[in-house]
Amino acid sequence: MSAAATSPESVPPSGELPSTFDFAEYLKLSRDRVEMALDSSMGPERPESLRDAMRYSLLAGGKRLRPILCLAACELVGGSSELAMPTAVALEMIHTMSLIHDDLPAMDNDDLRRGRPTNHKVYGDAMAILAGDAMLSRAFEMVAVRSPNVPADRLLRVVGELALVSGAPGLVGGQVVDLESEGQAVDLETLEYIHLHKTAALLRACVVTGALIGGASDDQLQAMRTYANGIGLAFQIIDDILDVTASSEVLGKTAGKDLLADKTTYPKLLGLEASREKALQLVRESKAALEPWRNKAAPLLALADYVASRDC
Image (cartoon, rainbow, N blue to C red; front, side):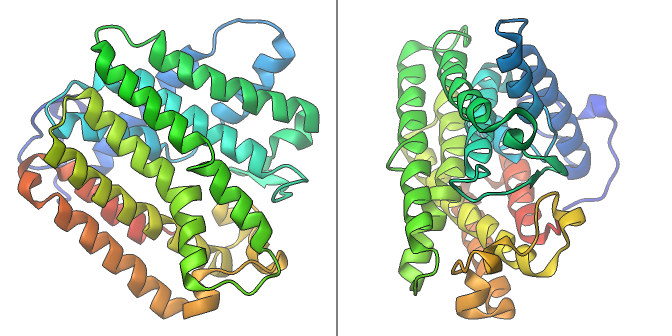
């Protein structure tokens, strides 16, 4: 990853990347674009109490890796990231919904998210549930209603991907198995199932939907799925490690929750060092999947390295 400096103007919103790619600058500019789009996606609708609860969690900051992955995938296959931005926003809304619901007392029962009180601690359990529900509905609205100039057949495939990832084949199914596994002896296969559905499925949807909007070929879509599955599983393994090694202040959420809930994690099954090596191997395999498009894949390759090296 080059450390060469480039000006904001030298990193285009889509298309070919400069010969010296500054990932830190790319990440900052992409995050700024996403933040603006997220803010504008939430209008002055009523009831204001619901809007406030939605904005509280959606605009709480974060890395915005999921929408950035969507934009980068669209660019890799030759599409315009501007066309993918509504879908990128939709993906962040689905992610935010999952965080609001996961934090509820009936789920993971957490008081802290992104460095501040969780949604239900501020607005109550009922409003948190409804804010999450409204966020999920708004996600489909962003794709189906607020995506001008994208061919209808591509949008239909995107809607299908979002429906799969947000339901039983994805986030919901993974959460159910996760809840049922608390306090149980869980083997590596079950743990991988949970992580592939709770975490990797949404990351895969980010990459695949961006590629679909950009007009990806079948070969490109298959490579994108392989890439995203790898970084998705690696992302969760690193999360498991950080839950053991990092503080709540660093994480922005309650540290040690997995241990308290008696959840099976990669460090619990494999140990810290073996877990780190597993994550690194997954990242190497993810990057290898994009080798045929290496000259255009700098953002996705750098994002894979970022997943493996993050400390918060």
